[in-house]
Every structure is written in structure tokens, then in C-alpha cells.
Amino acid sequence: MLADLEAAERYGFDYIDLRSDTLDAYLRSSAPEDLAEWFRSHRLKPHTYSALMFFNWRRSRADRQELLDEVRRLIPVFNSIDLKTIAVIPSANIAEHATVGEIEDDAVVMLNKIADLCEPHGISVALEFIGSGAFTINRFDTAYDIVSTVNRTSVGIALDVFHFHAMGSDCKDLAESDGRKIINLHLNDVEHLPIGAPYLTDEKRLWPGDGCVDKARLAEALHASGFDTSTVPAAVEVFRPEYYELSVDENVSTAYRKTKSFVEQYLTEQ
Ligand code: ZN
Image 1: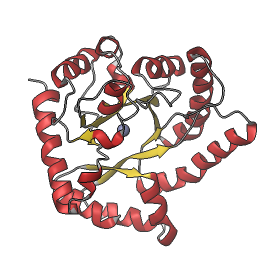
Image 2 (image 1 turned 180 degrees about the vertical axis):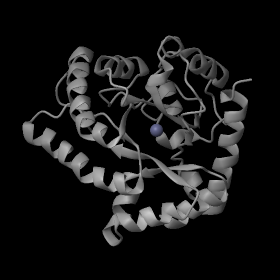
Image 3 (image 1 turned 90 degrees about the horizontal axis):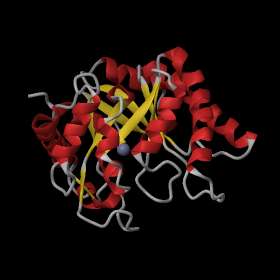
């Protein structure tokens, strides 16, 4: 993991989102304090933990308790490296045919429980809706209703361009939202495939600017919402198998170049 962090710093990134599997693997052989020491001696800073999986629609008390115990385990790690945001991912492939209303009510309760634990430590919670029919929260409008009902400044949305596109979230909903509730922005692009197609998966992601997403329209909606690009750093998130074939240097330098040009072209106020 440290080699990846070194590369991210070398090619110009200011922040890094820490993948849960990567962090867990690191912590099996090192202490959180070792990672804290690395960040203290480098310019690169941790931004978001990505992610706490399947936070909602846990049907038993034991299942809910297990999730909250995981949050309690993570908080001291976040505190030691001064990480301030945790992304939470909704549950998928649930057995019940739950309505949107039932899913929203449950998610509000769970987000409040998570925020009760995180907020005293200055840690925010970012709900990331996942653009796939399998997921309980898969569109911007649903995620926005949930965080609006929660109504805490420490609870917001992670807007991932791929997920926004992949279930046909509406730029009109985004434009009419309060952009201050968008606390994470994941940049990428996607091949031109039918909305809702089972093969429209993470593997079809492309570098920001390289695919079919209507970037100008999305950027216009983000600006209309009052989203502040100066306070929310843009993260690049691509899970394309071909990109994993690249060397770390080529991968990270391309990610930086494509993200920077996307931000300059679409997100920086003219
Ligand atoms: Zn994402």
C-alpha cells in the first residue's frame, strides 16, 4: 500500500481514499501509528475510507450490532491517521421486496446510529448510492431523500459519476438539491452501454473524460446545486481491468492527468 501512496504523492495528488481491503491487509502486519507516521512525513493526506459495506437493511439486531461494532473498531484507526470521512455502501440482493419508503426509513435509522458514533470524532458519513439494480439505494434522488431526512451536517452523499449514470439518475434532481450535502465526488467515465444492462458494471468504467457521460450537463447541475469544488476534493475511481495491467507509475500519472484536466474543464468556476 505504501508504494501506491508514494506514487500518488509523486504524481501530484493531494489526498488519497483508502480502500477497506487494502487498509485491512496493511493493518495485519503494521500498526495504525506506522501509517500515521507515514502521513506525518508526507504531503499526501488521507481523505475518505472506502467503504463500510452493506450498512442498511440488516434484519436482525445481531446484524445491526455487527455493523456498529465495525464502526467502533475503525474509529481509533481513523483518529490516528486523521481521516475525516467514511463512505457507506447500501445492501444488495435483499430477500424482501422492500419499497423505496421502507428502504429509506431503515437507512435513516442506520445512518443516525453510525453518525452517533462518528460525529463526536469529527468524522462525516458519506452515503454512496450504487448504480445497479441489485442495490437497495441506487439513484441520487433516493440517497438525497435519505440524507435530507437525516438532516445532520455530518451526513452527506458520495456522488460517483459512474453510479449516477448507471441507473439513470436525473441531473434535474441534482440541480435542485443542496450541493452542500454532496461531500464526496468520484470522477470517472463509462462506455456507452444501455442503462440498466446487467453488463454495465464497474469494469466498464473509463478515465474521466473518456466516455459517454454528458459531462457539461452534469457539471452544470453540480454548479446549480451550489456544490463547492474548493472544499470537496475530486477523487478518481476506475476499476477497469485493463488499467490494473498498467504499471503503478503509468496508472497513477494517467489518473492524475485525466482527473486534473476534467476538473479544469468542467468543475473550476470560470
Ligand atoms: Zn465511488
